[in-house]
Length: 317
Image (cartoon, rainbow, N blue to C red):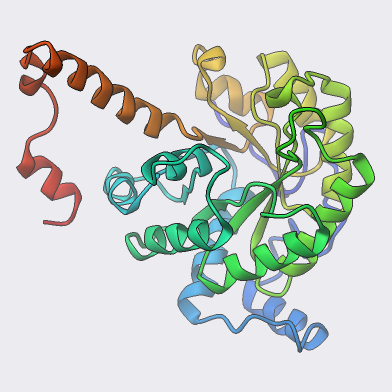
């Protein structure tokens, strides 16, 4: 079973989005662009017809009935594979991309992350959203500039999180966190860029569902299109979150939630499922296992995996 919503920004309680441009499926995207262009003539991003179409396709995934999977490639090759496998959109992973660059998650500079996203965009015809971490800076202005740069390279969407990167103060104070989302949303508006606002409470040792919902409600009010709280512990928490907000909700697939079916998540109100750095971690796990076996003179792993010809097909060869 899959869920159906009259308004892609509506929650399971049937509330409509507060911002007229969000969730109004009868308002054509091109019409909306022309309207916004007249309101924001200085800051308007000049979109090509292809970019406009890509953004519209990504928005449509959030407004149509049912749930969809947004897998996370970590480079151009994995993006090509996922495209060939029939997914409808892709999202970058900060962790997976950092690993591919020989760095820890959080160690990649903004310019490098944007270039990595650009490489993925060039490898697929699908809409691509980006993990933009905390906007690569603490201020609302940092977030706004990151969104502008992301839209400029052709990304259809991206996320801003409220993780500070500090172990002793991991989550931005509430007011600042909301201001950061508001600035990002204002920067996203001229291009139609789909902004996901993400709270890191459950990932950062603050497993308070009430506080998480409060933050996501405020982020929606500030202009976020999609809401995301990675590492929710169970289906009941997911249901309560979806019931409490009026925007599409992204859920991170984790080992803890692996027993849940798509039907269960859809019935709970989830619109979108991502896998974060999991594909990268699975690939790295395979490399580590094969390397360890090789070091001890065991090469049975060579009988497993895809052939060069099979991989070439995924790469368009």
